[in-house]
Length: 190
Image 1 (cartoon, rainbow, N blue to C red):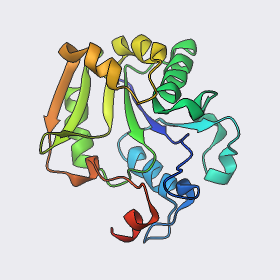
Image 2 (cartoon, rainbow, N blue to C red; image 1 turned 30 degrees about the horizontal axis):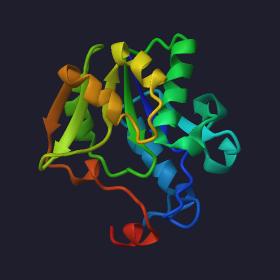
Image 3 (cartoon, rainbow, N blue to C red; image 1 turned 90 degrees about the horizontal axis):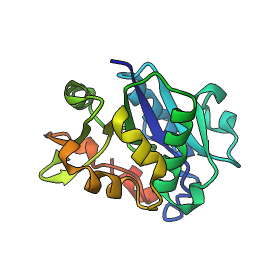
């Protein structure tokens, strides 16, 4: 089954105070580059949602991997809606998309393998850690029209709520499914 990773990286990172996509990790890599590399360990096709005013080269993202979200400033849900609308318009051959946040490079590859094992055209597959939902979340092709039509700013929560029967939750022991970066101290603490 053809799959792809879709990294949401179009936010303004207001709580961070600067463009966190460039923030350096302990190994010297930029946060977004590290997330792309981790996703690339399990997905041959990794796309990145960016804002219209972003310069992909400044973020080390190839133009061919970019999906521009004209409504990025309206929230994650609208960025995802723009991206899924673009995938549908291009008649993307993938059957499953893993929605991954741009500030989450710590997800274990074994976790991704477990999620992929549950993936299907009509499933939403989500990891949970101690009952808390995490990322990446895999959406089968049958759910893409609902994601493209989503008008809620808070990600895909409304879509998941409307399609509870499609939801497959995978309990994991991987803290990387919850670990993200909101403030500079979040990087220092890792």
